[in-house]
Length: 400
Image (tube, rainbow, N blue to C red; front, side, top):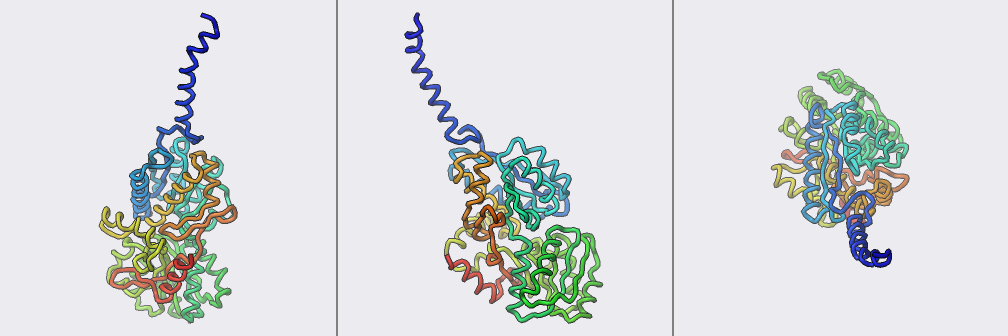
């Protein structure tokens, strides 16, 4: 058999082979059409931040279930690869090193200290990374592959200062956890921004995460001319300090940040929480928003979450779900799981999530603005926007 005859006989098979290879590639340089898209999730499932990390996990799992039920991404299923950072930065590094070779992108951790430990590794490996922690240092200065989902600590600080100014308060006390990156960032921003809002910080009171007695701090506030006490803290200190505040009889209003915006704080506080002021992401108070796209996206998460778990999604769950939506949309926009293409798609993102409308850019990897933060009071065990916040949020979500 001569070469020409052999080629004619083999040509149909070669054409079929080329078409099959092309179909498997599908223009997605990140993997074949039959491969799952693998999303890494590192959160605290043991240790002090277990209550936060477990809620993030539930929310990300819900988002994955929903996207897979709708056909997946790029014709492929999304698979979650989860690890526990044990609320410890070194364990966050261990978890990342375990999964980095198997994943297309990363979500987490919720513990700021762990997030800051993982960040340089993800940047080195050019791993698209959506952090669930609000510490400012993650995105200032910009690292090309690092993005933040919660509003930054500085945004919570500025939102409180806007509210404080609107309430006519001139002097405040600030208590902050010197061992928490979130708290340190928030305190630093509040000190820096206070003059802009004509607010004086009369008492500047550091404490440590392990502090169990806040009575000295309350006495310092009592002896000052502070008109409000802003408390920066996550996890156990938020409950301990709030309970001791009630027991102390201190009349200076207590302002708590969004780390307390969940049943994890409300339930142990019980009736003692009534009337306290607590910040939250916009999604926590979705029921109080006017109808529109923002409320629709919040309900897309809140209703099935409530049905599945028996309670509304807390602050931390909002962060995990929002991170998932952002990542899924970036993969769609990139039409690929190529890490560089996902990173580029994230930098052009404009998307409404339960946390608000994100507008990432090459110079902004936080994406949110303080306008998507609510200032609430506790009423009958629920977070309800203050009149000021209700007016501000309505303007924000109807602005288009």
